[in-house]
Structures are given as C-alpha cells and as structure tokens.
Length: 375
Image (cartoon, rainbow, N blue to C red; front, side, top):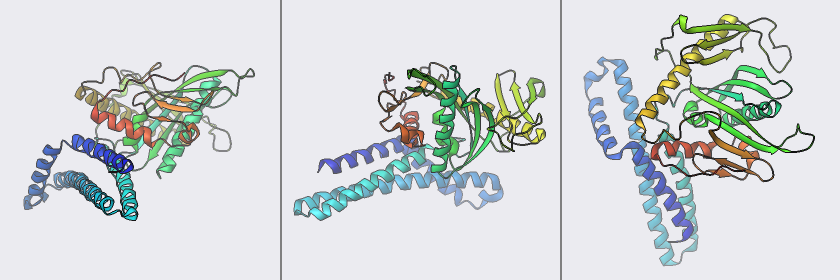
C-alpha cells in the first residue's frame, strides 16, 4: 500500500474510532434496536411530544451509525481496489482510488464533527461576548479584531449575525461587544471558543514600533427556547439603563434605552442596546441572562461527568486558550489541542474550523496535550 493511501486510511480509521467511542458503539446499537421497536408500537403517538423525542433520537442514532458503517465499508472496498490495481500495474486506477480515499477522509472528518455536536444545547443559536482586557487601546483594538474574526467565521458557515450590545473603545477598537449568531449548531461549534485569546504584534499605536502582548476574553452561551424554564428572582437583579453607544451615525440612540442587568448571586452581567425601545432591550437582556445561567448549569454537568476537567476548564486571565503571533513570525497556536496555523491572516479572516474540530474531539477523548505557549 502506497504511503499516501495509507495516510488517508489512517485518517479515516482515526475518525471512525472517535465516532464509535463517542457513540459508545455497542450501547448505541442496542439503543437503536429499542427505538426501532418503539416506533413500531402504534400507541407511541398517544403522546405526541414523547413520540417526537423518540423519532429525533432514532433519526440521530440511525444516521450516525449508518454513516459510520458506510464509510468503513467504502474504505475497505477502496483499499482492496488499490491493492488489486497495484498488483495489475494499473496506475490510472490507483490514482483514482487514492483520490476517492482522500474524499472519503474529508467526509469522515465532517461526519465526525456532526456527530460530536450532539450535546443538549449544541443545535441552538448562540450569544458570543467579547471583552477587552487590561491594556487600553491595544487590547480594545484586539477585541475589535476578534469581533471581525467571529463575524467572518459565521458568514463562512452561512450564519446570520446580529449585534446585541456594543461599547466603543476610548480611542480605537471596542471595550466589549455581544453578538447573536443564528444557524444550525451555532452554539455547538462556537462553545469551544470561550476563554482568553492572546495577541503578540508590533503595535500600530506605538511610535517606537515595539512588540506588544494584548488579551481579550470570549464568552459563548446558547440561546434557549421557551421549553427550558429558568427561574430568576426579581429581587436578585440590579437593572441599570444608559445611553446606547455605537460607531456613530443616525442609528446611535439619544435616549437612555440601553439596559444592563446584573444577577447579584452569580455576578453575571448582561446588556442590550440593539433596539430603540428600553422595554425590548430589557426583554433581550433577560433572555441573555437566562441563557448565561443555563450555560453555567450545562458546564457544571459537563465538569461533573469529566474526570480531567480540573486543570483545563478555568476561564480567566492567565488561562489563554490560543495565542496569535503576528511578529516577528506568523503563527496561531491553540494551547489546549496543539493545533497550529502559519497563516494568521486566514485565521483572523474566520478560518476557525480546524481549531473548533480539534477542541470538540478532545472533549470526547479527554486526552491532554502538553503544549507550550509561544513567545
């Protein structure tokens, strides 16, 4: 077997192994049999809501198991074809079969990520907050660069992006911004981006052209629907109104329509200024608060189910998840998974999928990677 073909086979096997591990293969097969039996029971639809849940679970499992089996079968058939073509000296057939293996490896990677997006809230729309760290203009400019990066990523995936809250920087950039990203599995993908992001570059604001390090934080939480009941006591809230800020122009409000809500017990703060109506901004901010509280509960459950979260899940200053170096060399490095890119311009233009895929996979395998930060 040629080295190129073996590389694709190994890549496919790795994706299939992760899929089976994620599905808990033997358990998934038994569960699918149970669900198929329930679907054949005519009394299932006596409870429409329960029936829909059963059908959704059955469809998800059947799709994941079927895709895994199909890829495995196609891989074996193509590998056999390559061996036969090599034995017969048919170079054209070998080339075509290797091209098929490459396409299959890409499909396996896509199916792997789709399967990994099976969390309770992964399919929901998402809020994404960006906050500049200490450092004034430098960090505020970096926060604006991150906001553009995530907007470009969302656009690449065909998602819709709405600006919910915006606090302009003192001289340039932004102090903070909150976006609502709408699209299939928006939260499932974006949740891997929560954490501190570090930038190293020659500052455009330093007349001495010195190298600066800047930090900004990203926080991601899902938009929840009406079926999820989150109780919030009015007595636990501190509600402030203020004048909306923006980049300028006719859409900047001239009344105190923006709303900021502080949930005192948790310390969570949310804000909305995307509407001219204070009432509507308050409703949006309340939905954001409930979403933040729901995300916090999801995180607690995930941490409780994981045996290795203690060293990796703290999100705060000094716990950056990724470094972006623009000078004196070009490198983006994820400090959780070790994934790197030597094309930071592409990453800052929204090419984030490889980083997200690796982080999702790591949640399944639980494998720690010893990664050194870059200078």
